[in-house]
Length: 302
Image (cartoon, rainbow, N blue to C red):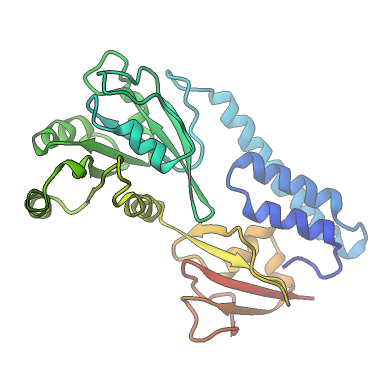
């Protein structure tokens, strides 16, 4: 990927940077790239570009820190998904299925008194999942909904949908209706419910947090809402990296190169592609090639 006259430690740091999901991880990766880069005239421009990028990231981190935490102590980290629902709708159980969080789960009403936060890992892409206290309860704080990227309205009964439509109508983020506890329904009742939902709205998913039914589909819905693709880098003669470069849908090879550091595309002499956007494995492509999710790139540089 990087300049061919760099050592193993530099390439290790570069992989760490490309795999970074948070601002803090990107800063740490850039610091290691700068520290491990060989210092000579041929690398002066590259190191200067890395330092410029590091400065911008650190300024962004300082700005984020100055904003501080919200009313409930929540700091937005990357793509943020909010779980909202009535008490005992199963929000906390869904949180445990999606993330590494371990909230208190109980059949008693209003068990969730404070937001519970977890991180969902979907094949190397991360999203922050926040389970809010039940709506209509005294601990519910609606302010976070206005900055959320994706809102999951968790319900058990169709009659609750109108309530959520009214509460969420002014929220800017994308919304998904999540019907939970489908394990309690008969096959016939489930078919009727699905038919009713299809006739009324297009974006919904039926799940059971208890049995895990279609939780993977819910994860996929969250990933699709992020509007991103995963591109994996490969060094000659080696397997592709396990961690992707994450980019917006519609990104090109040029975007990948410039995400490494500004000007990196100018030292690329050849790019090979294997993946969904190619016609065949190891296809030679140009910088303007539009990439798709799960593409694998191999750069050869001067």
